[in-house]
Structure formats: structure tokens, C-alpha cells
Image (cartoon, rainbow, N blue to C red; front, side, top):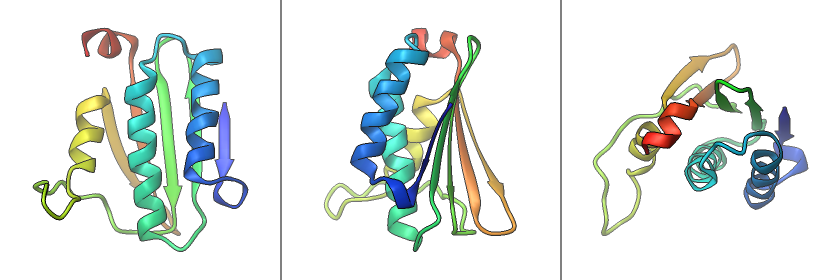
Length: 124
């Protein structure tokens, strides 16, 4: 399991740690897809919260799970992308690249859980 707290890392370091984790523990996963989702989830957590962010990754034979915890209670919303002004594409990307994605509320904030299964990665 990989666990990174916001006080110990930034988004670029988190991506590098995620690549090392995937190579060592989850070679079946498409690193480009996973890194794009990690970047989207962490980027949104950084953009919309003051702190208290956490990235957790776990890989088993049957699944890869990435969870990002943040201090915002606002749930992600799918929006139409705006190519001229930027933004609005991230949640759709996360939904498209994962086998499933769920959002859970917590007493302080929320977690976004993205899951991949080996069969989904081969089909992508």
C-alpha cells in the first residue's frame, strides 16, 4: 500500500511515487491512465481545499484502488468541458478511465475512490 499525506508531498512527487508503486506492485495497470486519474483527483483536491489531503493506493490481483481524501464536503460534478477557458473535463476523464468511481462523505470532507480491474485495463 502507498499512502501519501499532503504535508509530506506535492502532486508531482505523488505521481512519481505512484509510478514506482505501479511498477513494483501492479504491473498489469496502465500507468498513463492511473496517473491521469491521480493527477485529476489530487489537482482538484489542491484547487478546492486548504489542506488535509491524502492519497492511498492499494493493488491486489483483482483490483487497483486509488483513494484521495480531502477536507471539502463538495462532491465532484460532471460538467461540459470548456476548451477555450479550460476546465470541466476532469470528472468525465476519471469516469471513463476507471472500472468504477465512488464518492464517500466523511465527518470532515470526502474521499473519491477509483477502482480498476485487470479486465478493464485490457479492454481500454
